[in-house]
Structure formats: C-alpha cells, structure tokens
Image (cartoon, rainbow, N blue to C red; front, side, top):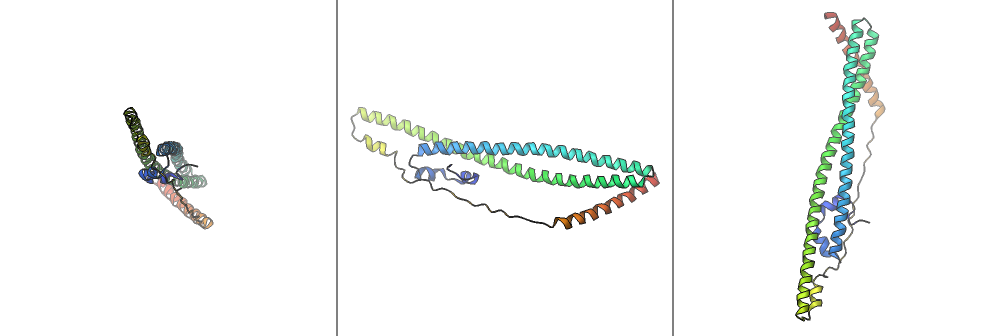
Length: 220
C-alpha cells in the first residue's frame, strides 16, 4: 500500500513532519518520490484522455453545425417548391440537430473546466515532487558529510564514533495513515415530463420557422 491514499494527501503533506517521524528518513523520501512520480504519470494520462475527448467533441460540434445549415437550406428549397410537408420535416430535423448541439456544447464546457483543474493539479504535484527531490539531495549531502567526519575521527583515534552515527538515527515514530471519505450524491430528475415539454417547445419552434419561411418565400 502506498504512503498516500489520494492526490490531496500528496499536495497537502508536510514532508518535514513525515520525515521527522520516519524510522529511516532516507528510505522514506525515496518511497515518497516514487509514489509522487507514479501519481504524476496518472494525472498526465488523465489529461491526455480528456484532451482527446475534447478533440472528438469539437469534431462532433462542427458536424452538427453543418447539419443545421444543411437542413435550413432544404427547408427553404421545399417552401420554394410548395412542399410544405417537406419543409416541416426539414425544420424538425434542424431542431433535433440544434438540441444535440446544445448537449455537445455543454459537454465541452464541462470538459474544459475539468482540463483546467487537471492542469492545476499537475502543477501542484510537480512542485511537491521538486520539494521532495531537494530534500533527498540534502540527505545525500548530509550522509557524505557524515562519512567524511567519521573517517577523520577514526584516523584521529576518537572514541565517539558511535555517538556521531547515532545523530542520524533519531527518528522513532511511524507515519500515520491518512484517511479520507468521499460522498456521492445521486440526483434524479423527472426526465419523462422534461422530454414532453421539450417536444412541445420544438414543435412550436418548427411552426414558427415554417411561418417565417413562408413569409420569406412569398416576399422574394
């Protein structure tokens, strides 16, 4: 099991406090860096998937917009040819396409918000990882310095070598595992009633556009 339980644990972690409590701070900092790097890979992978999804939605949006324009042209042609039935059908398809466009645009807005959050999380995680690596470098320098001092003292026949080594074994307590709970809320809606109301609104819009087309053709 990892040291951290979720992304928030990493970015909110007090590395100094964690290392002070660790029995082996050098080993602990290595484990911390490893988990941070793995989490960063996961965050970046999630961002890549979201970017790919955004491109797909943008292509779908362009296709729907072209479809709307196409149905509009067909409705105008049908009115010009005195085919009110075909014009009504074309306008109905146009309304359906406009509804689909609204849904795609909403998905794009939500995805854009998600991408912004992922980018911010990635930056925060990278900053925390840099902090951990700086601490690791500090441990390496301290260890090298300790070896040099021990070597000098050994040559001088000092008898306090063990005392010097004990300065690097002060850590006694273990890291308490961080726990968190996530609550999910299910939101239900009366979709049947909403669908009926949307159908009425769509039919009304079709009739309004049909009347507008008749007027446009009659005046042309």
